[in-house]
Length: 195
Length: 117
Image 1 (cartoon, helix red, strand yellow):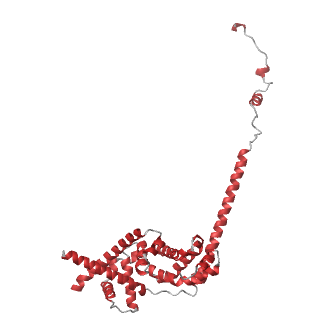
Image 2 (spheres, rainbow over the protein chains, first blue to last red; image 1 turned 180 degrees about the horizontal axis):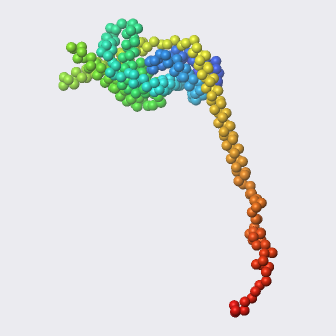
Image 3 (cartoon, chains in turn red, cyan; image 1 turned 30 degrees about the vertical axis):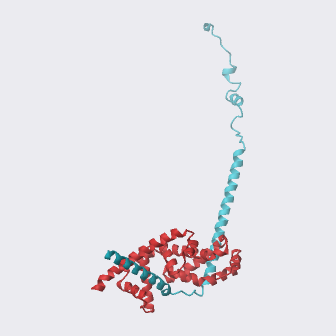
């Protein structure tokens, strides 16, 4: 927890200064998560503000301060999902966009050979974006939270308010779809490499 | 059999590559620094939504009050018996009005026809 429970309780009672402190404590983390979820940097700040706006107007519905962080994640996930649904970003990222170079990049990544420069990072982001085009916005966010943000199944259970087994099934299916896309991109690359 | 094993190996290989790709994505995405106007803009949005919610609530309250007042008014109006000055109050009065006593068929002489017997 980045803030103490007392601060959350004060914010729940309408204390603007307490709310301000919560925003200042969490905004960087929320900006980072949203940046990875929506992958469109010019809109990250707007979506983050929407998260805090929703937080402000729904803080009185928070039962206990102990569940504040999953609650914040839930608001973040919902705001990112609404944004992605509006943008229909998936149409921009199709599997056909996954170039040979990007698959090679993934290979290099696995072997730890790639250089950590900006060009490489850009390609890395494009590769992941392309791969995630194989799943729905909702599954994309779920996969991101698990694989990229590193949330545990227990944490995801609190965020989604769904039981762990249902989450496991959904994650497995989403991952399989991404793997299939990854595999077919690798196959396209295979014959070229051989030839 | 060999194909099956190779397929399984490829799948595991892809799985590992994908996991590595996801891990690398985390560090490849730059965390944007919040702009100088982040907090002022956020508070402006909060105030704007508050104002909108307040006006909407006030408008909704006004509508509810008007609807309740109208219902009460209509209820009172319907419960009062209305006297129509043009319509007679009873059947006798209506009959008397339609056939006044001075009409000729009532007050005229009666003729007895002996052939009726």
